[in-house]
Length: 112
Image (cartoon, rainbow, N blue to C red; front, side, top):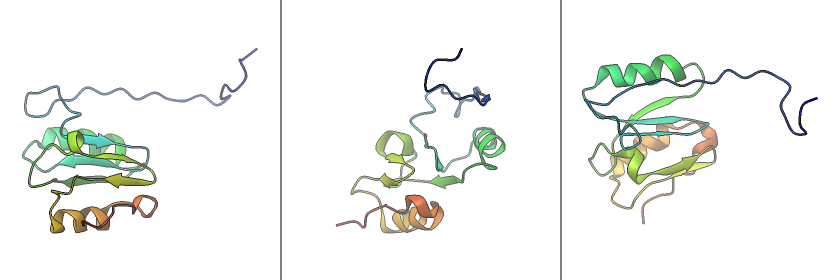
């Protein structure tokens, strides 16, 4: 007998290895939520292809920068309800995020 609260449907766990320009610190340059994935803008096509091939059928993969930098995972916090970005985020970067995020996460506040 299964313990209470256990899902009766089988789930496939995904665990994929990837590097960004020789670094294993992928959480610095990416942010993954249950509604979208953010990856930094850069030259590492093999890094992006991992996100695209594994996630694009399920959630949008958004390429972005924050304050002109590539460390999008380090300075953002998000979930399916929204995304918080630092006040140093540029107006064009903020508009790109608003346009690229799915409707359920349009909670990116305007800069003050």
